[in-house]
Figure (cartoon, rainbow, N blue to C red):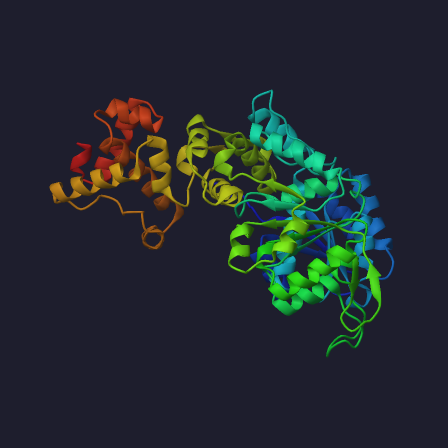
Length: 501
């Protein structure tokens, strides 16, 4: 099997201090394979070789290094996402860096997993370029298109439900109103928030995001509203909160349903008065920021449970948008696969999907939405050796769930049939029961065995719910000849498999 790396290849340009081994290992753990360089000449040489996903640079009080890097990339004919590392003494440069084209900005001494995961996500969003759009166009019917929020970024809205949502979002974007995005985890709420920002008159301003569930309570307060020098122990300089960093642009508050009650009151006051006061200051700062909030919770139920303020709910939900789960927009699945292949492989243009693999992807209910789809795609990249993805390369988080949807039968019918057969035959099941994920992981000592286990269970379910092998083959989406071959192979591997005889 050929080796296909899914980690992003990142150049690390720091003229002051090379990247240390512990930090390099930490970045590798979140999918960033980093190569450290120290000069522009090294950058130019690296750009000529291609295969680079992003550039991380450190700059001082000027933007000379950022502009020099952008000039080199322009000459090399590439446009890499740039992450800027700024000294905490000059954090006020963060907004300016974003306006000059940086994909993300963080402090030079910030090595928290959350911060670098956010940087990683910003890089991934920018990698979905025009080449992704062309690949999606080949995989989707000719009438289906990929709507682009800007020349640098693309978003996959192919399904009719998604197109309707996109059109509505672009219309809402033109009005300077707060918006609340609802939808399940992993469905793409932040992507829609970026569409709202980039389709609005604030598109040239910064897009600043905060996950309200990812930070401790006291840090959310400081991150949102900022502080003055000396406001508390360790406050050695003034700090502009996210509201001030987002001036003229958009502030995205993800998982707002997790925000503590006392901060909800403070947020409501800021939204009403359009004024904020930093911690340790008496001076009020006027703000010009558009708020977009997102949640996977039922905020109405949270209001009834006294976990969310009703007045804040009405303040942030001037217009509500709902992102459907992936199972409700099947037209997006294959185009998303194309985009994910581009994100995780340098040679995504060479990948193809068999008809059986496409059928399985469309049949699966996707309880984890787009994030789960990304996991399945990454596993397929690891398993397929020739850039052609077959059905046996697809490892789903719940293989039994896939079998039920492929066979179009009720869960109780399959479970009853399987249990009855085993108890009547007095034989051990020739392959492990994958209904328990932990047990399955313990038994499947490697990826190939896990794939085989999934295929065995599907074949068993098909045979138990049909009257003939021809019907079973039809339900599995394969020819009777292929089914006979697979049964013969399984029988050879499991001599006691009476059900395959």
